[in-house]
Amino acid sequence: MLELLNDAEPSRSAAPAATVTVTSTTRRRFAPDVANVQIAIEGEHDTREACVAEFNERYEAVCRALLEVPGVESKSITTEHFAVTMRQESLYLPWEHGGGYYWCKQVADGYEYRGQLQAKLAAEPEIVSAAWIALDSCGEGVTFSISYDLAEPDAARTELMATAVAEALAK
Image (cartoon, rainbow, N blue to C red; front, side, top):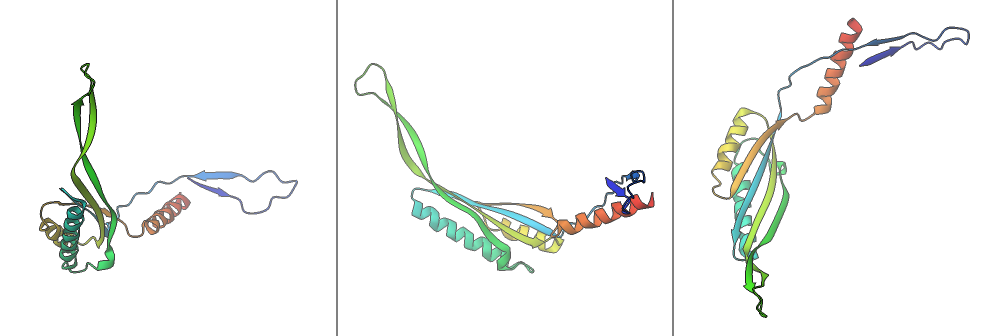
């Protein structure tokens, strides 16, 4: 909603300035110019060391694959998260004093890892499809999703606001 007020300073004896309210709604589609690629690398092993080693191998494979795509630079690939967690198994053992009671013992049952990477690419069909193929070739344990956005959403909002103001003034 745009509210236009009289800018002139009213005299003390003058009646209050009139208020005019004009509204305008404008819509426009903007072609996305950024492709956000979320990449997950995950797996499991018996030891933490094996988890870290496999993550590093897969991470390097993902980076190599993406950097072979024309237009992708190393600075556009970032690591968002990495964690190794212990898997636990619950064993229910009879209580040593009998009576039909059991107690739960948690035992380690290996480790799981998950890493999250992000790559920001130009939203050009050739680049996005080449990145898709490159990531798909990274094999098991690597999954990804692609979403699209505007690099400068504030510029789009400013453009829409200017259009709405112009339309409102034309009313």
